Structures are given as structure tokens and as C-alpha cells.
Length: 118
Length: 325
Image (cartoon, rainbow over all chains, first blue to last red; front, top):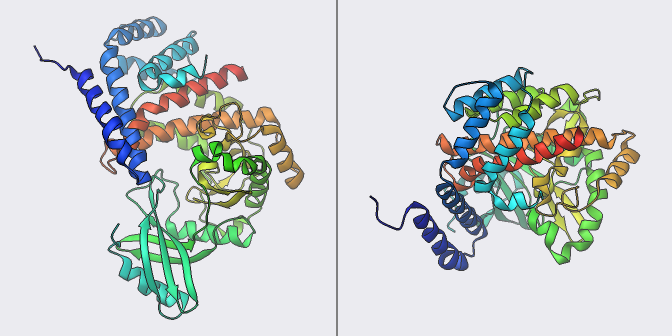
């Protein structure tokens, strides 16, 4: 057992500190820009930790179906799809899969980007 | 900020170049690009103060076809001679404390893309920019290639495929973009001197619009449509998505102005194929930038986060592929 705050809550606490106490006093704009990037990075970390493994499992099953493969490793499955596309042999359903998997990545990395595509 | 360790070297070099003795008055590191340093340096000579910008190599380069600072300086000179709006080149400086550098005139204006598309006081500039960008590209594409034999002319698709392989992480969406481009990208036009990174973040903008074109490190020889399409890439609209040309204007008048000046007719559909390529290029670029951090070439939170943001370009790519189908 690990005591609270859990990993996502810790990332959140650090992000809030940077936002409310560090950013307001930064005047050098290089430093400010990097601090904003760091805040964004912590936001990604929080969402990644909270996302759990549900998305991965769904992606795994979808890739196994798409490729007709029993491979379990998600990176290996994506690599096989990438190789087939490069060889000019993208399986039917590739586009729909990619749209779902890229959107899943962005729910963690940049939810605001998704809003721009509604 | 204290003076850099190479201030003495710089003073000696400039003393020879500017004639007479030179005193340096402050050197300030500006918000610079990802792989180069930019220093604001004031050099006092007998004739007055020269406001200089010293561009100096940073740690590592972005990709194998990046020009050396000496080559970049020669391109800047060629652009200046050809009448392109660029800062006046002052001198190639050789190495300062082990890293190449050159000096050019320091020009005043805004270079932060997000501010260029937003600042109320730049409203007039935004109106002028689409036409000015077309004019500047017409001038750039007229720079004689013969004087710049070192400019790379690699096949961009082959290069991107190779760079994607170095990432060592599968990106099937980018592969789909590359596969589409291998079949559909028109490649019938003569290759011309190209800037290679012509977008809002690399322009100096004043109240009347374009003041200077910066950052020539990716200059190469290519189909001019590549330069023309690059500022259309959504990441370079800085949040103003509806204005497809860099967040400042519409595409059609820009293309027409370019055609009127050069006689080169580039259909919108063709430009859009190059826009797709632009998104693949920046997607691959974001991934390779993140590797510079992950491999320890240059540790930086900014580079690290780019690894996750490549998915933004992947989504835009899928969106454009669907529309082009």
C-alpha cells in the first residue's frame, strides 16, 4: 500500500504550485515559456496516471482483430501495423483504428486539441 | 545576465571586422530557437553603436541536413544580395569558445507567432502579411542556386522515412501519411532555393508587416510548393485555426500574388498535398526533437513534451487525409 497523495495527486500539487506561486513572479520570457511547458507536462502526467490501462486494453484487442494477430505487446502490434502500411498493405479498417487511437493519445496529451476538431 | 565567456574573443574578432577598436556593451541571451543561441550585443565603435545579433551554435542539430553556421551565413548573404528582406549580414565569426557563430544586424519587431496573430497593434500587419509573404517567397525562390552548391537537395519523403526510423517507436498514422504522399505528391516542378522553415515564428513583424526573414539553417533546394505550404500547417496558425495561412489570412490571395510575381501556377489541391507533407514533417520533427532530450543530447522539458504533442500533428494529418480522399 502507498499512502496518499497518489501519483496523480502529487503531480497535480506540483503543477498547482508552479502555476500559482512560481509563474506569477517569472519575468524572463524564456524562463516563463519553459515553466508553462513544464506545467503542461505535469498536466499530461496527471491525465496519463488517471487514464489507467483501459484504453490500452481496448487498443490491443482492436489491433489484434485488425492484424489477425495473437501478439499481446502493444508496441509490437503497432509496429506490425506501421510496417504493413509502409509496405503498402494497410489492412481494411486501418483509418478508423488510427483515428480512435490518435484521439485516445490526445485525451491524455492535449484534450484541448480534440475540442478543435468537433 | 553576466557576459558570456567568449565576450573577449568576440571583441577581438569584431575589432578586425568593423575597423578600429570595439567595446562591447552588454550581451543578452534572447529567446532563441531550439538549437541555436541568439545574443543581443551592442558594439561601440568610433562611428557609433552597432546593434548586433550574434547567432551561435547550441548543442546538437535538429536533423542531418541542417546547415553549418558558416553555410547559413553564406545563404543570408545571398538572400541579402537578392533583395530578400533579411537582417544585414555583418560577419561570419568562426568559433567562439568552441562553437560557430555569425553576426548580423539586429532588427526590431515581433517574432513570437502567438503574439503576431493576436496583438491588437499588429492588426494592420496581419492584413499586409499574406501578400508580403508571397512576395518574399518569390524573391527567395529567385536566389541563384549556383552560388550555394552546399545546399542539400535530398528527397524529403526518403529523409522523413529515415528520420521516423531513428525514433524507434511505431507511428502508424505518420506511416499512412507517408504512404499517401508517395502516391499522390506531385513532383514535376524544377527545384529552387528554398528557405525550409518559412512560417510566422521565423519572421520579424512590425506595425506595417514583414520586416525580415530569419533562421535560414534549413535552406535547401526543393519544389517551391514546399515553402509555400509550410505556413498553412495548423501548428503554425498559433491557435487562429480559421485563417489557414499562418493564422493571418486566406490562402487564395497569397497563391495569386505568388503566381502574379513568378508565373508559377500552383493549384490549391496541390498546395494541400504539400500541407499534408508539412504535417508529417512537423510530426516527425516533434518526435526527433523529443529524442534529443531522451538521448541526452540536449536535456529540456520543452523538447521532452514534444514527444507527446506529435499526436496533434497525427490527428490533423488524418483530418486532412479524410478531406483529400
